[in-house]
Length: 250
Image 1 (cartoon, rainbow, N blue to C red):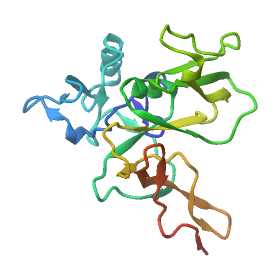
Image 2: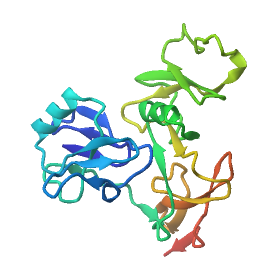
Image 3: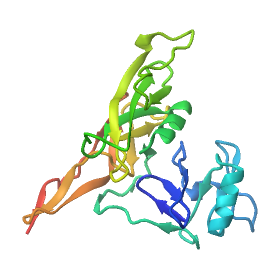
Image 4: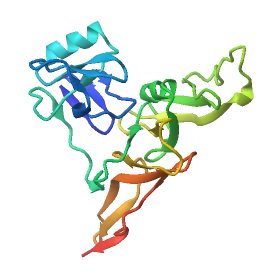
């Protein structure tokens, strides 16, 4: 299996997409409860379900398990025998030394939809450069009251079908016919902020969406901020930029 930590996408050994790995509470494997002394699967007390371990599964076994239950939650640890992790981009990573609550970064529409349905507040950011054309396109709306997402790639639709209790003013347009190319990163990302996060609380973002240069060289090379502490003000996240921002190296 192949796992891309930037997009949280899991593929089989041939490169076929299997699933997007997403935990709405950003739980790490060590925060899951062991079921017994010898088993590798674990239990999530929040979702009240068993979490499938990929550590000892072969590529074929993992594919079969996900075919039986496409919605299965999975995890792996550094001892996984058959999972290859793609390298993360180089950059300046701020460690979560204070063990702050982790805000999950979402880089595709299905994970955004799941987070919104689970009660998370989504803070959207444009990612990368805008494309004039793409392999497909979409327009995205969000219900300002419920947080529900709706999108389409069909010009003939263009606006969410309204339920009896909804009005057009309940929706805000998040993305207006954004072009998506398979050779570029997905052009929209979002931070998923738990309703448990209080106004003014400091959190940790392990995958920063913004392009913020931290150090660069006279020759023109640069490193961006990849992980950071941020503060939630009730409507948005403000990154705490390291003091060495803009440091020039010879």
